[in-house]
Structure formats: structure tokens, C-alpha cells
Image 1 (cartoon, rainbow, N blue to C red):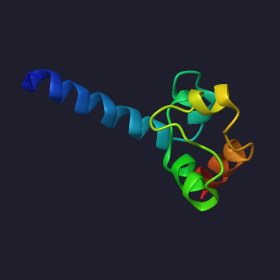
Image 2: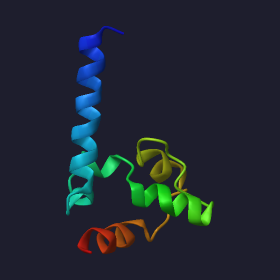
Image 3: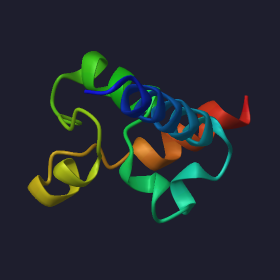
Length: 79
């Protein structure tokens, strides 16, 4: 991959990660599909859901997402 493409990919991922940490990220249609640290932590604490690596739509399609994820995400971002 050319260096310019690598830099662009890095900056794009960094921007998406920053946007995902903002309050209301789950309400934006595009950002709602990106997995967050909260999603990852819920997977490791319960091991019964949240299997999507980068995107949450896999979990929604397969029914493996935790139903409490949106509430947990809101609680974490309010702190």
C-alpha cells in the first residue's frame, strides 16, 4: 500500500475513533455501525455477544449484540 494511502487510512480511522467517543455517537446513523471500547469491554466481560470486530451491524444481523449496549454506552459517555 502506498504511504499516502496508509496515512489517509490512519487519519480516517483516528477521526472515526474520536467521533465515536463523542456523546450522541450512537444516534448518528453512520457512527452507530462502528464498534466502541464499551462494545469491546462488554464482549470481554460477558463473552456472550458483541462479536463484530470493527462494525456493530454484524451483531445486529446475527442477533449477538447485547441489548444493554446503548444504555451502557450512554452511561459511560455521561461520566
